[in-house]
Length: 477
Image (cartoon, rainbow, N blue to C red):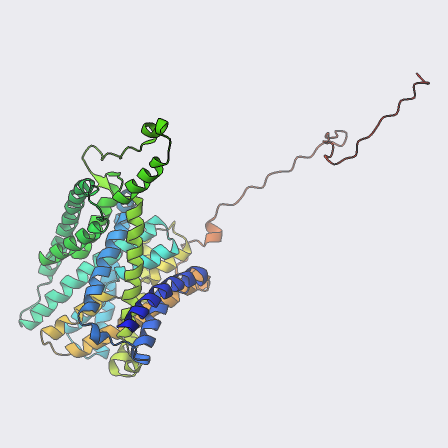
């Protein structure tokens, strides 16, 4: 037990060190965390992920909820509404092209046919919010690009879940898969989850003012986000969309109120003031807006970012624990080597057609490279196995290895894009996007003023010039 405690403490310091490495070198910390997990698990056998039981899927679900909620807090509603007009067609076009290509390839290399191949395409068809959002935030992308990629990951998550479960259930029941019903279910799930998250956000923003009177209640908001996610999933709608819309709602309504910790700090400062001006300097608690809605304080937002950082580090470390290097020599490993880079191919078309033209080339390349698969794919890969479908074991093993290789590929591409190594490649693939140098406004040179030769500008005497004494000969006057 003492070794685990020691390891937990060292892991936190290591995670912060890798974050510093990422900021200095642009080598993604998620890649280094996964490599660290591979070394600690399959290579040196210090840890065995099977000993943690259900902690891995639970950690993944909590990480997804907290990341989506915290990212929603920082999305301005105005920028989000502007980006939604491009994010929805971008997500739908990318998802449909990717699923189509993956279906064909899975049929060829995995021996799946018909709806089994389509199901495999749906499992690997969406991007992972747990990977996309930290990368986009770490690189400091524009609000438009961040909103499009965040919404895409949330939308495709809904499509993956509904498509996979619907197809698997139809195959297990030996009934025809009703595509029209699947589309209706996806649209209904998205709409209901969106409304559910907004209503839940307004409700908690109203309650938040009352929670200020409770000590040690800073993390009740994160607990509430988990309640919203779990309730949405139990109702059969998208918990990811509900968590994201909850964060967006709470980040854009109400006024900022003081937390208990903030009030304690203010009271301590006021106690040091003189009694004569104590009443004048006493801070007034900011009242909620007319509708009684409150917003999270800056202290709480900083704390939530710390939680996101630690959960993200644990998630990718655990992902590395589940991958054995020897498994890449098996049939699932060889199939994963083929499937991992495939989503990059169909993504070229949506980036060229739908992505904002005013975006710089580096962000267009980043949007093209944001194809990571994550926890949703790993969990959905177990659905065919639970229903006893043919080829389910091969699908599960292949998907797990594909996720690892896919995230590794994304991390490498992000590093190359940040270093500018793919600028020439990107200029040929996306010629309508401008590089940072060409898109920057040209500076108008200021003409030099030429003075006529007969005009001499007065010069100020130097500060350190020696004093000159005038000698006047009084005899000559």
